[in-house]
Image (cartoon, rainbow, N blue to C red; front, side, top):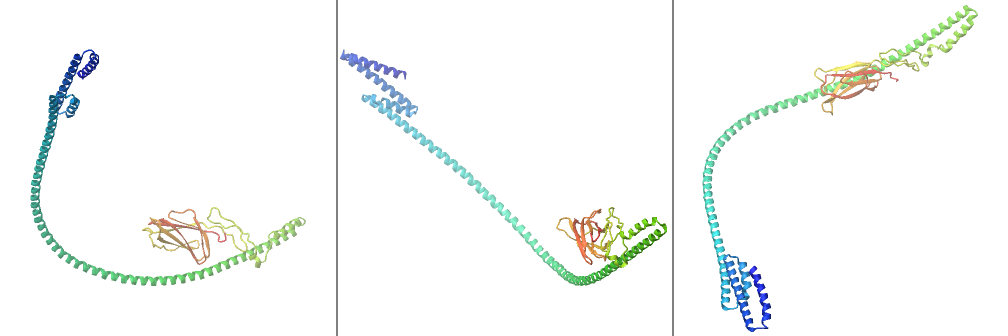
Length: 421
């Protein structure tokens, strides 16, 4: 690069000198032209040398650039031959490179084909060996399968014989079952008919019992009313007699005491006024002045009843215990228990709650007439009532609770109240 720069500088200087010398001496002018020609020749030869060097290194772009730079400097036939030779060398080297590349590609293709053929041959040999081994294994399996098939066939034949024998035994058992089922159905039909007859007789007996109990209840009610009326009449007579005796004693005392008897007589005369004597026949229309009766309730009620009724307080509660030694189950029915004029029975029915039964207590008139009072149905011992019920004369009512299944004791507490309260 430095030599080229120096040449350019020299060319500029020579051109300047040429311009000045051309005016002075033509000989010097020719000498300068020769100098320029030698310089171009040197540049041309230098470019040819560099192009050949690039061609030898197979730097074809470098060689083409050098040849293009010196193409205009070839002035003689010798220079043209040199330029043509350098160009021919470049083209020949390119062809050699292309040929070498082609040879390498062909060699690589031959190597790949040979490798592929070797791999294919090995694979074919392996496949042949696998097919041979597979045929041998298939033959062994076929022999084993045929032997196993023979064994299975023998087993199937034996199983078929056993099956026929078992089928015959099962048929005999099935026939026995059908006969037993027919007997059970016949016995069940007879039992249902017998139960229906018993239910019908029980309904008739219950109806007769209810009718007799209603009649007895009516008779008992009439007798009780008559007894109450008789008691009221006797009480009225005693009150009347007591009032008469009091009046007579007062009058006798007034006559004996003299002057002071006048004032006392006035007081005695007022006693019948505050409690007038009434003929026995009018007791039913008066009002009772009796106090309340004693009961087991810690806070008894006291009341004055009208039109001949007698005062009555609440009764102490009664607890009925229904016990099952095996635990109460669905469809169990207890015996009847009596308390405070009621007949109570426990019936166990299914519950809609898991783990529980529906326990129903039936309260029926025990012959005392209409009944009103408190009750409680529970699985723990009760100490107070829970609800109020009414039982009509000659009739029944019920109360039910969801309680644990299978418990052994159920408690029913009853406490009668005044029917008029």
